[in-house]
Amino acid sequence: LGILVDESVTWGANPGNVTIHVQYVTSTNQKTYSDCQSGGLWTFSEANLNGCYNDQGHVTLVPPGESANRGDKLAYKYDIRQDNWNLRTLQSLSTNADTSMRPCPGCPFYADFQTFVNYYETTEYADSWIMAAALNRSVAFPSGRGNANFGAAFTSGSKLGLAEAVKKGTAYMSVFMQIIRDLEDAMTDCDNKCDPDDLSCQDIGAEAVHSLDAAVALYAGSLEGTDGTENSGVMPYALANRRAADFRTGGPQGERSSGTAHVNYEVIKEFKHAQTRLLADECNLARQNKWRIVNLMKVPLVQGVLRYAYMRDFNNPSDAPTREKEQAEGATFAAALLPFVHKCDTADATLIYNNMRIGSDANKVVFADVKAALERNYGCMGISCPLVGGFHNGQDYELGATPCTEGTLQGPAAPDFSQLPSSSGGSGGGNAGVAVGWILAVCLAGVVGFMAYRRFGKRKNIADVMKPPANNLAAVSEIA
Image 1 (tube, rainbow, N blue to C red):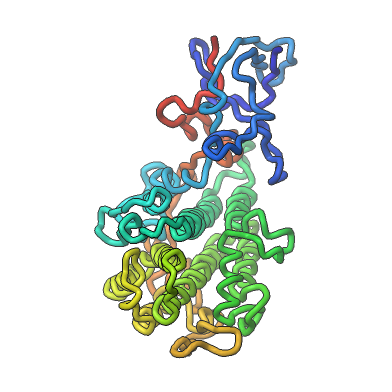
Image 2: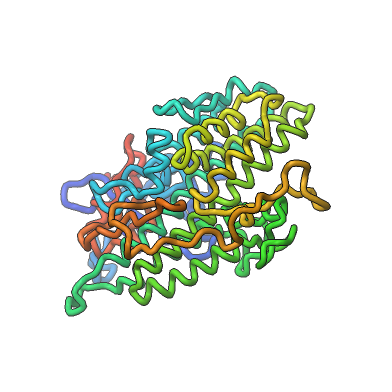
């Protein structure tokens, strides 16, 4: 049976090639976006092959604009288990970061990502943490900072703690930084002016908002429902709501123990303002919105560190699986936050790490020390005491966990980016700046994956954007 290839041929369809790569048609419905789901799902016996190509057969390659009877019919064969793969995965957000976290090939990293590279001295810090937890082994970063030995610390046989380190590492280390990357890409798009008389000039405002939409999608995830009240998500939006209940920072005014987090009200407001400003070509004003979004996203991470520091200090459970779970959660929140603290004060970052690290003795965790170290750096990180709140038990603040008082609920004011030197950058307080103000139109972000293909397919050769991985796992069809 011949198959008409109505999917996109991404690369390899050239004379003499024996392998071509085909992108399956996808839908916008999250539950049915693809009917061919293979890859790692084989390990869990959950692969869905209903929409996959048969392991052998014929395909018809039709040139653009031509009818089916003008195409070439080719016999093919491939490994249905190993040769169906995603161009973009959650793991690739970290493993491709050396390329994707730059505004253009060869450009410096985006400023906030550079902060993490400075701390860990590797671009794949998130994947290193996640895989160490997944395989119950140790991770030693080149810098010597932030190390974790899961295998030595988690000996109960339970997977609870390891699972938490994997899940939270994925959402709050890997996805968290990708959100920042998409925000930076929106600013880059806004800066990339082109001649309006050039017929090939695309709508730069629309391009910028496309990147902003990607950031919103990752921030919220697909499980929150259309109005964000499903309370079943796993991305930063959901974390903010959960921590707001713990720290009495829910509601529009940040004084409730239930409902939508004040942080989420503010983040969504900043996203909307950024959208308006990007469409109006007000790049530096949109950069202020980006600066505040990134800083607001730090608040639930701070709350997570505080929550588990308190629990380990005062409520250390007797059963090992629960102890490992709490240790893993606290350590992972710290791993996602410590580079920001380290940029502000290296000694405070070391203090927090020593209290929260994997393998730390719960009897030596001092919540008051962790709280004080974090609070000393709120202003530098672009947040405030009222934004963070205090650890609350539903009736009152826990002993020693009341909110500090410095700052306002609005947090520090965003810098005037039009007055800052073009090379300054990143989120945070007094030394915040703009990472992409100097970028010219020739600089396009290097991205890998399906979204990149959708966005840049008309702008550059897709073969230059997406390269198949090693070991020929990219082969979708081998021409016989």
